[in-house]
Length: 632
Image (cartoon, rainbow, N blue to C red; front, side, top):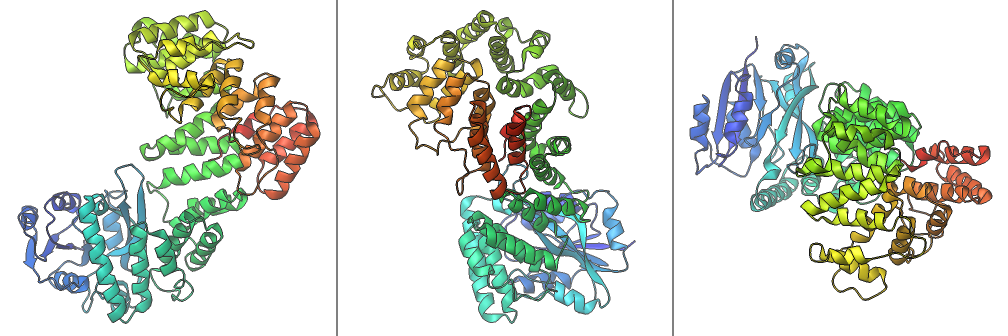
């Protein structure tokens, strides 16, 4: 079996080198650690793992230090890592030996995940040749962002550098801010020096742009990378990464056309580059071109380099979003489910799955799905997840018996989870006509601990049957516990606020009124805080829309008067969809039909305007809920 030598250059890495060597110890037959001037315990820790350690003078030249290490390696293959990286366990576990046994491979590109924060899934991806044959004459070139590819190609004629499933996670960008700034400043200094003295100008100009990209200086990165893309030879190993970083930078700058152009150029050079395919799909999706986005993302699913990676949850999330826009709702549900089963993308995918599931199926059936494999949630957890979505739809009465079974009675509401369940229970009781039971439950919760949202929902209950007169006494009565509620009451009376009004509070109040169907109260909040916005520019949050649509005509008319059903440049499509459907619900059939037709002209790949027009012509709103699904 071929042997593997791990080669590293280090300096003051005592906090990270142990975890690095631990991750690769079972795969490396020898460990070469070259130190460039450590003043800490780096070498002592390395020797504990059996490393052979050497000292090398640091001349501000990474290739020199890398080559110093290569000359001391005796393994058949060389694996290169930095001390702030860790090798993720390969899947399957014998993948590593399969790679080194391939007689047609000179080396392999390894996926480098540059973590940007502690949040799961928040990383940038690079593909770098880090595993390669140890052959005579092999040498790195370059002062920084040193390259082995050209030398490897020359030393191994007839062999190729292939993609591998190996993943190295890089933790360096999670270091303290001062350390990051020092490293970034050092890199920029060395890159500018390399541009001036190295023969491969294109590569080092790319490397300079890549460093700016990693520092999130997207405008400078785009300016550096844009002139290079048409000049770089197709065979250059970095051309796909250049295209990706240029496209991503332009996307962050809002230059969608330039970003799409960069992905197209990159995919001509590398048709199955996973990051380019995914980014192109996202850009097309954001440009209201879901059919093309679907083509790009399904190509990604077939890409050999994406198969079996833990990028799959993110890929499935974006594919589900496209499928939803195309009306493939059950396929979208499956994609969101697969994504939500992975922790890294659960917070993004689970809300989309729940919203779509409640639209397609009865609430009790969705509950049963949540408690069965593969989700396998407890009844209590399933109710916690599901309740906000059935509240918005007003369809939760069939869940009410489950709350008692989940032990969420008011008498046991001390625990945080039980308090949340008791709150949801109260809202669903109110929606099902059991207002007295709902009020008792909310008051029981408030007696344990007064919280702002509980007061707002109880206030809504107090005003549920109000025709024209809305009482504000309850808001003032809790001033000692929640002072901002008195400020809200003052503002609703048209008085100067007694203190600062939290900017999110009017929206929270309006949402509570919608969920409790306290329509007069909602109209008061709407008129004071939302109708004052310029006509045609009011944005109605997507999670308000189902409740507004089932509201009395007076509420729908008040909201409609602040909206425009005709799409405006730069405005989200879903705003126009909601306004046009509201217009239809109020009897403005011709206006709604004209708006949907205009949307069809402007967004020919979107299905929703066709659904809306179909409903207008058939005088049916059976599919209206699909127009209110989150589009973000």
